[in-house]
Amino acid sequence: MSEAAGPAERVALVGAGLIGRAWAIVFARAGLPVALWDPVPGVAEAALGTIGERLADLRAAGLVAEAPEAIAARIAVAPSLEAAVAGAAHVQEQGPERVEVKRATFARLDALCPPDVVLASSTSGIPASGFTEGLAGRARCLVAHPVNPPYLVPLVELVGAPWTDPAAVARTRALMERVGQVPVTAFRETRGFVLNRLQAALVAEAFRLVRDGVMSVEDVDRCVKDGLGLRWSFMGPFETIDLNAPGGVADYVARFGALMGGITQEQTPYDYDAPTVARVAAARRAALPPERIAERSAWRDRRLMALLAHKRGQAG
Image (spheres, rainbow, N blue to C red):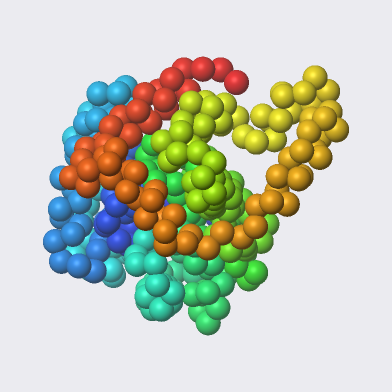
């Protein structure tokens, strides 16, 4: 695969569930034609209605300049996988999180697509090496893991297998930048990728604090949403500590390294024990009944829209 290969002009989306619909918005609002296909009859067609609703929300929040109808017109439902990938320069897969399914899907994609077409998976945790090793075109395969929903949270983790051509990663990174996402590149595969590993550390500690009777579920959430999360919405952990000591990172470690290191020594692996999970689940259901989860999710997305609009208006 040549470094000179240009960015994708047409994108095929394999899988029209939650992530597939979100990807359709990302690519279509950037002006790219999108072919949407799902193996389950009717799913892709139904996705168009949801996409239209989300585009209307984005327009109301000032996050898209075009009329929702104009963006949606770039998204077409394909009658078959063959029709979806025909003429596509980038294929984004978001099927079930089962390695055998991905292995079969990528085998079909590898057989159908010309050698210069990048094949990327949205998988949340299955490494590309787990489902591309036996493919003739394995060098053009990688993971492009988004954060849900990608049309509001722009980060995309690019993770190649040991045999992935760096040119395929570079092309995908250029495409993601072109469509307004924020790509980050992993130098090697890790279990769960980077974003999930960072999240796993925080979530596990949150469960441990509840398990050990240190704090309530509600107050642990407050520690993040009204504490750490305010800074983390516009800077990462390294920049945070760099600004938390007069002399920067080295000064921070000199002052707090012993304390922070001692804390991590107490953080033994957490196995999500059933009693603690039940306590956390009960606390959440008391705060938010099951029938209101969808409503609260929509509220979350509106808050993310407002935050994204604010961040776009800020310098630096």
